[in-house]
Length: 276
Image 1: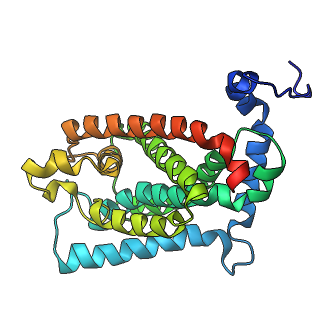
Image 2 (image 1 turned 60 degrees about the horizontal axis):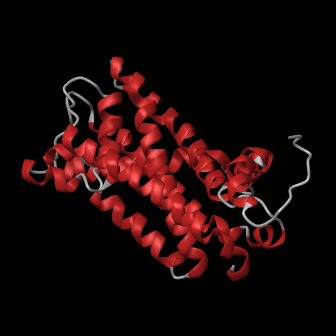
């Protein structure tokens, strides 16, 4: 089928061709992602450097509070700032993606109400924008590792696996909240609270190894625990251990979250144009 062929909408056909339409509308996906990247730091004094400044300042606060004042231990031989930032990277990606994804449909009301296209494109493009911030922030981690002369081991090659799991967690959660936000605008106020609460119950500023063994599996019901632990296991290496039972539980929950998020989004997607 030619990319310029007309789209025929008839009963039963749109469902069958939905996933093909995702590919056919890939240029819209690129446009939305690129548009959001361009306007993200428009008319700001330091522009893209906000993607570096925010996680860096948060890392400094967590290092002082947890590393100096609370005197919590690091993992392996890793300096505490490296430990914190290795946890800050996936959490920042997840929290930004969740926030942007949940608001993405509301922010594109005019587009949704006027033309047909697979609505899944909008939240997916929002997650990609947050991933760009993630890549930019990664330069701080490289700088910290160079400063402390921390050389990663062979485990670093497994990092894309944990990035993919974090991506799936953000996408699954974001799809649920994006769909709910269309119908119940209260979620616009719920999401910031969830992100703030999640920061405190996730091992961003400390090692999850300090959690008592009998609570580790329960603690792993937070999917970001294993994602953060996986990042540290891959980046720091050395004596850092991955709690495999918790990782398997988290991996199952992330997949369940992603699949259920897509199914629910597809179920209610046809109503978006009417109620948005």
